[in-house]
Image (cartoon, rainbow, N blue to C red):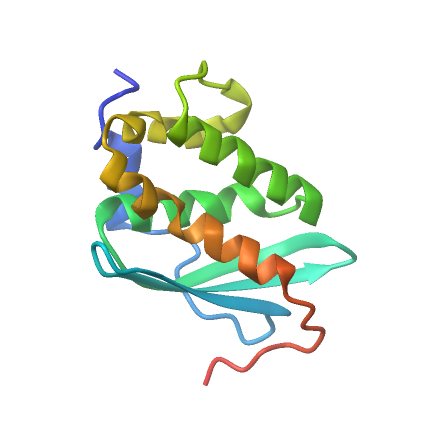
Length: 146
């Protein structure tokens, strides 16, 4: 059932997160922290001509937070900055409203069960809000990971 909080996809991305590494040639980065459960992450984004060409993260967090960051990084590559921000809005709506699940979210629909656990919404959206901060930055030079 799609509403099960710890579905196979979430567990898989939690145990084996994709794009979980620092990125020396990132053009933007931001730090995210959820004091409620201690989730922390640093997000690296490489944007060229307003297109997200690469995105990765490092950090530690609960299963929901880690899986969300992992699935987010897979979902964003090749999207424009505007498309990435629209996806953030759709994802946030999925978690915070009772609207019908939009299939255009792809694998991200597995998080719809989080809406039944309000305390976990911040875990699932940490990477996304960090993305918004990173995309709002006007950094032009690659960032150092040291």
